[in-house]
Length: 241
Ligand code: NDP
Image (cartoon, rainbow, N blue to C red; front, side, top):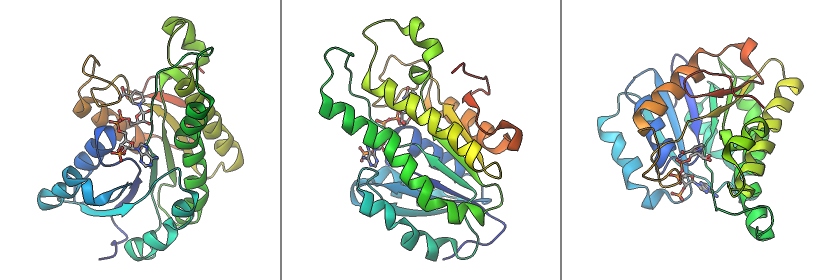
């Protein structure tokens, strides 16, 4: 089934669990949304496919491993039949990994894997999605970052805080700002979800996914061209670079 042009169309990576899954769930509460939920093993993503039965919006699940560049370049083939002529309104680069390390102990392979997942993946997916965003109504790119990628906040986290992950998010932030400069007609923001109870955030995190994602949706939908290039938190606060 193709989208009707009145629906808002979303592509969300890392939709199998955590923040991505809750984002899909909340968006599907409205018939106004068509969600393309990308995950690397759809056959195992039972929580995601289980959302279909109660969804008011439209759910389409596609297979996407963000470190596999061939798989990324094949995204248009998967999107075309779903979106029809509607284009893409929101690209949410959410998939991410965190492996704890420090600058002097990091494993270069872990740094490369983290950059490939958290930075290169979003960069390539953005490239392949721009033709769809060009046809979309809102033309928004939401890069899910972390305050750990804020150099201005690094002293507050202190030494010992994750190194590879933080570097990958700082680079993602710069990618977002570069996109704003390159394409002022798109809206690109880099958005921290807060510290959220997920597999990545851990049980000690401050926020339930429900609260964080409600904020993410509010920020994603309310931002305008004037906000492009901003580093924001889920509650709309500006994060210092
Ligand atoms: P989770 O670990 O709960 O979920 C990560 C998601 O990313 C899963 O769906 C996972 O898929 C997917 N993923 C990981 N690697 C790949 C890959 N190579 N290709 C495709 N999908 C992949 O993490 P969160 O939901 O907490 O994190 C989501 C985003 O939010 C991340 O970018 C993270 O950095 C960011 N964030 C999270 C915070 C938190 O407190 N939770 C704080 C700040 C930022 P699979 O199930 O197949 O492994």
